[in-house]
Image 1: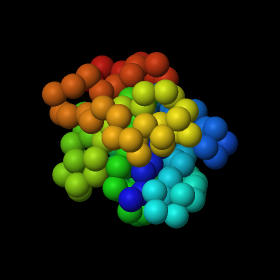
Image 2 (image 1 turned 90 degrees about the vertical axis):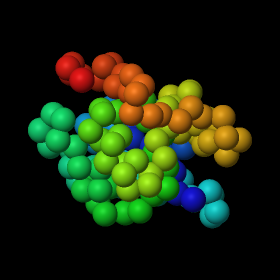
Image 3 (image 1 turned 180 degrees about the horizontal axis):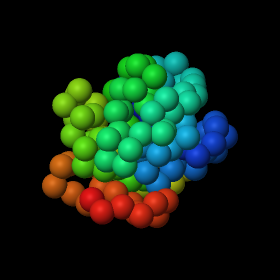
Image 4 (image 1 turned 120 degrees about the horizontal axis):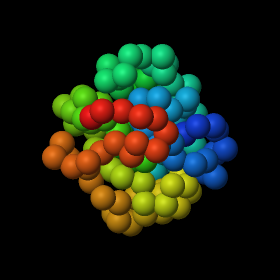
Length: 125
């Protein structure tokens, strides 16, 4: 499985999970089978607020799960519609969240939850 983490900068496994999926400069992707890390620049970082296109953001790359610090309701709806599991970061560090993900200890997010962290921007959703 491929697990994606929005990050401010690519520090590999030591990257900090960014506070909001759509405006993250990039994504660290961890492959649970090969244990390899990859980096994707956010191709949709300049979108209008509330108009995040997760597939465009990931440059069309396929992932199975996303671990976020925060995410808007529109993005979570689009990801869930595409069968992508969305979970909340517990530690804020990719390496630690990978361990928690593998153990099945991360919280799944749903449409009825407060999903936006509000820490990296001001928003009204």
